[in-house]
Length: 550
Image (cartoon, one colour):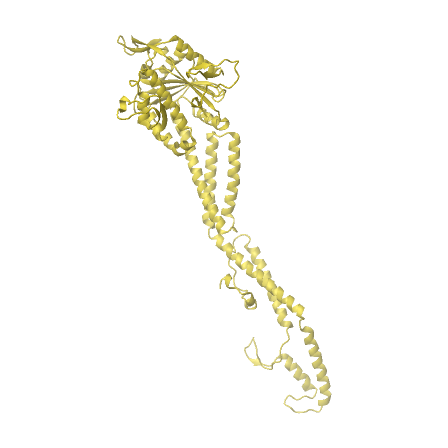
């Protein structure tokens, strides 16, 4: 019989000796059992009192409950014994004391009737007794149902308790990894820990407490599994980032003291080879990026690949910039420092493979072209004037093209800047990072080298999250003339060299110096960058949305 089959009308026949479902070994079960026993004892005591006080009908023959025989009730013997002693003969015969015993027997009968009447219950007492019986029965039945619910909830105890342990371990590992990585601002990290702490407390209670409803426990288990997956992915991302930054970083004695507070220069050099980044080749992409985190300005200064330079580590020998890639990154950096009269604090070295793999990893980029043309390296593909969505190989062909333009290498530099800017915009979008982050890291691990330390890169990310600076991006290109000169690499053989233009070099130096010294840049109607008068305090109307990066 299940607890749903109980009928309150059958409480007099209810077997209160049957065991109540429930785990008696669980904490609190003994207290519940004691209450149930107390209710049962109360009910049985009331039931016993009720039977004692109810008048017994006159029945000379009844079934004796103990020995199963038939006999005469004790009260009948007492009456008959009293009458016999006073002259009454049970066999129907008269004794000598018949008249005298009659009066005495009547008195005793009256006394017995009076005692029986006193033992009878009044209607109010009888009703109260039945109510007490019913209440004891209801409490016992309620405890029966509750005990059954506890037993049902306890069936999932081992699984949910194990799940809660796994959850806590995943949370601890995730929290430790995020703390070690240190890319979140203090306020954001405290808020994250508070939210995770409250959420985890609720989940663990729902999973481990014994009297939780089954539906609530199932929901808590589902949420717990989802969070374990999130913690796992977050931990993998964090550990992958730390490993990537440590692997690609090299020693550097030119770094600034605080990269988030001091301006710095970064050189980007692109080698015209495919394969890993340790292979040397010509430096076809040469750009110095000046960053000021205080004024939130970024200046990209591009230098043509064939530009005339002097190499300090080669006794100031003259060559064109692209040839420095055959020697080392330090040679390229020294030549550019000499040309721009500035210190380059960091560098990033990439090659053709790096560009292609990075762009493919982030799902391609959208690049604006000023002309319609067919790149020499991919003549079957037409670049349309305006916006073009490009994959890695297309973007590389677009950035390398110069023969299709009347302005030659100068237009190629503009296209390289357009590709670089498109890569920044696409890579910093939250959707791209979330969906392609691990893919980007795994693809670029052997194809990029930089002199930023892991701590410095994490500090820049932390600054971006904390302050969300509205970066203003400016672009400038050094110009020169045409010449044919022997170089350090070619020896006595003359080759094409873009000769230096002192006015263009001086302008580039002034722009870099302004950024490094908290000056303000602006653009004229022809989109040429210049240093704004320090006395002008109003907002620069010439900086368009295309030249800013949020």
